[in-house]
Amino acid sequence: MRDFTLRAYREYLGSLKKAYPLFLSFYEYFSLKLKPDRFCIIRHDVDRMPRRAMRMAELENRLGVHATYFFRIKRNTFRPDIIRSISELGHEIGYHYESLSDAKGNFDLALADFAQNLEKIRRIAPVQTVVMHGRPLSKYDNLDLWRMPDARSRRKDSFGLLGEVYLDIDYSDIAYITDTGRNWLSNQSNRRDTVRSEIKLDFKSGNLLRQYFDNNPHPKLIFTVHPERWTNAQIAYCVRFLFDACVNIAKSLNKRR
Image 1: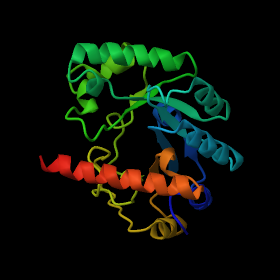
Image 2 (image 1 turned 120 degrees about the vertical axis):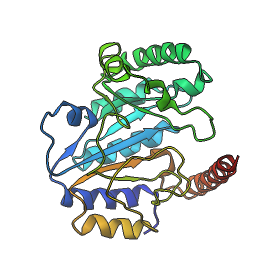
Image 3 (image 1 turned 45 degrees about the vertical axis):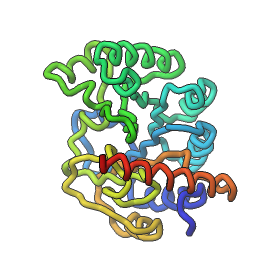
Image 4 (image 1 turned 90 degrees about the vertical axis):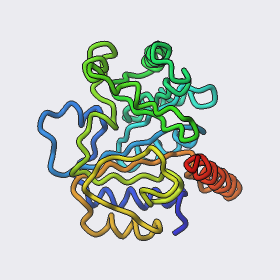
């Protein structure tokens, strides 16, 4: 099976549906006072190419799966028509913020930017959960926007948010699997997309990941997928492969500085 295609993603979904009777959005997860013993949350970070997110959302809808799509507010990514269509398919919409990076470390400007963009996306769909965009080549960590004593209450009271996906979830007993860096290795080409989990999982290939899903995976799973790198089209697949390879090299060089 060639990985990072929609065909491969369909296979993953088939395995996940057999393993997990319950799929949650982050809104549903944060809303539950008593967390279930077994669940799967599918998280999509829409960094670029929103049409690929649309195709992924349609596939999930056909298979009876709902997910959460976090959109950046950037010119080529922020597509109100696509965001609205994905929401109408039953998926949750969230805000993929990068305010501190955009404000070059200025906290006041970053908070103003966050508020403005949150309101912008809320005009299209309800948004109550957010997640930072890693911006691996930026020296600013967008999570630092909330690393202050009153940060959690500010997210709830000032912005009406249920949670920030990295900060407001206890991952200690949750398996976290992400395609960051175009691989399934948690520490390779992965600068900021990390959580503190006691469930250590690494897979050298998509086939091994699929086998894991097919053979009694951990009962609590958050599966993060970036739609931009998943396509069946041969040329687009090769272009994205080269793009990811270049980004990974840049990450490596930046990490050594």
